[in-house]
Amino acid sequence: MRRVRSHKIAAENLRKLLEKEGDYDLIYVEIPPNDVALAAAEYAHRNKIPFVADVNDLWPEAMRMVFDIPIVSDLLFYPLKRDAEKVYSLTSGVIGTSDEYRDRPFLNQKRDVLKETVYVGNEISVFDREAERHADEVQKEDGTFWVTYAGTIGTSYDIRTMVLAAEELMKQGKTKIRFQILGDGPTREMLENLAKERKIQNVKFTGYVPYEQMAAYLVKSDVLINSFVRKAPQSIVTKIGDYLAAGKPMINTCMSPEFRKKVEQDGFGINIEPEDVRELVNAVEWMYENEAERNDMGNRARKIAEEQFDRPVSYGKIEAMISSLIAKRK
Image 1: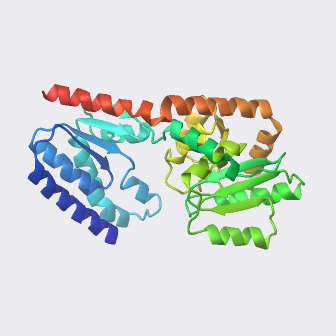
Image 2: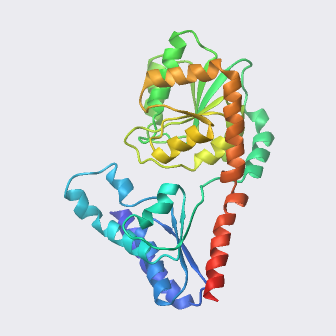
Image 3: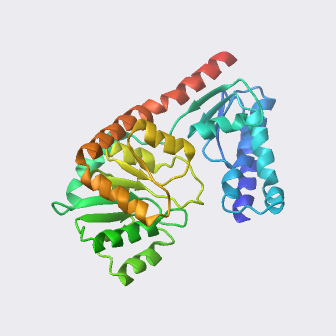
């Protein structure tokens, strides 16, 4: 409730600011939060100003994935749905962080407006520079094979299966395969204790790692894991740009149909089912044993990063849309 109230306050403050400042060529806003976006959309509509919505998540759809009770959820989330549909109806252009997000505004209403998919990527030149600069800070034993996860350690991310897969590989005597878990979060302590209790020695929890050092870890890794639990909201998350920039193959458990299709079609990794220890063990073993295929996937990953996730390149789509809408207004 505190978060909802803060959004309402932000929306009201934005309305006052827009009225006070005035004279805009274009208004660009992220959605969610829905009520903040609606404040901007309504102002733009009243003043005949081009309005672009950047869809970063789907509210209330994402919330229903973790709280879905018939009738109760309908009532609880109705204001979010109402505000989102109103925002979508007032757009002059839509940017989505995935094809699904780009197309969502047109699910219930057909409109002929500009739309583009722009992935939330990174600046590859910065990633490369920092990975090289901090390489000596990341020590990797010769002959070891690193399977790495980087990100939040929380309920949406399937780190437990990684720990149990490491245990199974250790039992098989494949001690050169090491799991590196970068990051922090509410379930980290529980998972570290699990590894300690079961004496799983081929898992390392690094804790929080600064971005610069994380880049070095990813580059020194052999395989990267995009690990979600089945019930988690599924999307193309921010870390994907960094994973791809590292030029390493990916094991993906995210169930987003769009991203699973991308992994397969672009050829930079393999999809497996989430929360399945045996599937993860098999995937890691396959990667370990097939160096040529692994390297090919890594090369494809880097190519996709450069073409689709490098911000100086991909954000050109946003600039082009803004320029086009402003030119039409004049």
